[in-house]
Image (cartoon, rainbow, N blue to C red; front, side):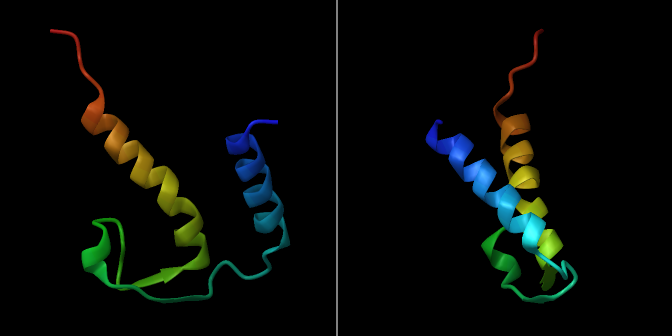
Amino acid sequence: MRPDDRTTARLHRRLDRERDLSRGMHYPTRWDPFFQDFMTLGDLYRFPVRHFGFHRRQLTLTRA
């Protein structure tokens, strides 16, 4: 199994064990444009996908 597949599988197992995705804490909004003053655990699990999609769109070339 590739390292990135192991990481994904581990995150899935961890997410399956979570009981309360609504708990959260405050984050400095200057760290990233997607950070909010208060972020829940659910927000944090969604963050990497949003962050990657943002940069993918920045780097994707469109045909003229």
